[in-house]
Image: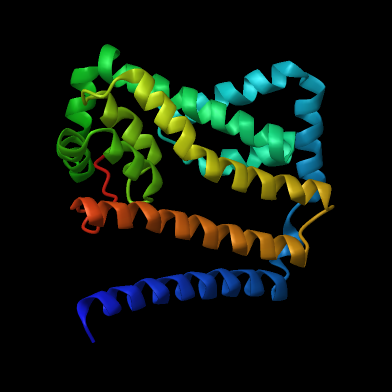
Length: 241
């Protein structure tokens, strides 16, 4: 078998494995009763708490998301919370706005406020070297690739790109656009938990489909990178304390 068919077969196998893993996780969750442990009442109380705050609740959530980005905390869970608290559409928009502003703040800190400290923090990080070199050689297209490839953590990128020559408006626009698919998928499904009154089989299928879609999206930039001769396969998420 030639090299090209082998690579295509490898990509198909990855997709099948992803589908199998997602299916297995949901099957185990259902048959062990883990899905029943999701506290719908607690989610509804969270939603009501934000509703009671009115527009101030929007600002509070966005402020929290900004802190998540600045302190490099896991952002995924807060996108889910946005869907639970504000519904699928408003939640997705608030998560996207919060993530974009948070990324912008981190970028500004790295470029204008604490550049030396950030350089000292990431100078030995292989992701820093990869992004710095990749951006210098490929420009904005490399930012798009790294935003879509899971191998490059969102929170670390925010600071590292602040050390490159990319213009702030370009960074903000690309960040907003490339983070939109994930924000809407996660927030939408989380919001459906409230609207459907809990976790149903239909919702579990939606989660599985979303996982496959996001996995397929992550393959697109890899294919583009391959055509442009940009190496991404050897990237590993390695953070230095």
